[in-house]
Image 1 (spheres, rainbow over the protein chains, first blue to last red):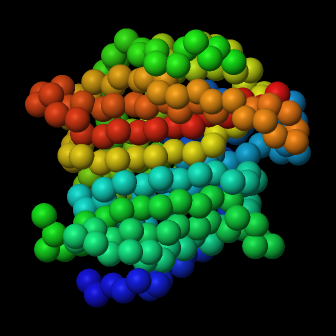
Image 2 (cartoon, chains in turn purple, green):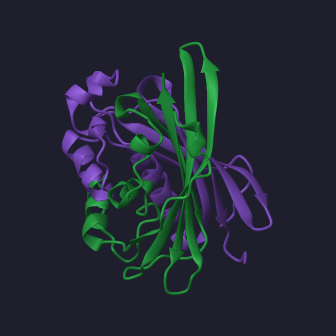
Length: 132
Length: 133
């Protein structure tokens, strides 16, 4: 894989999640927090509707990185959630090469929803092929 | 916020990746259920609550005041179907910050996933929980 600093590794649009998909993610992760499934509780928390799980964004990034580099080459993934994602809100997930050193590529990650609102940002490290 | 909980180590619990839950995990994201490997972030702190890691209660964070600030994964060794992981959660750090909207507290909880068969650390996950005032 020929990568250089500044290269885009992926720019992927993730469709908005339905209420059912968000509820299913809660089941799959054994997440008991009603903020993802109960609109009344979400209002108590200051949101107009339920919110999508931050870990779903993390999981999308991990799946995209695993597809690109191979799951066994992922070193780390560090994500900060910066704004809520609501049902049916698509996101664009992107990654750019920040550095390459010692066979490890560092990627800057960004998740953005409509209007250019950043919902998550982070950094990932992956071992390049041929690196130990 | 129970600041004195910083450094607290929860009793270790055991987890085995479930193919049934992993299928739901991928399906909820609209992804093909490729079950050739455990998805990289299938192991997640949320599973700890059913095993006694009740951060909301133990750190005194009302759920309606909680936000999820972020996550960090560090992978050290592959996790396979059938593996048993011994998971130990530690309240690594709690800090208080002043903001225009009032104080908030940030707790970093670290989960170490050790392969029970080999004793090797397979995964370290950090989850950052924020308590709003």
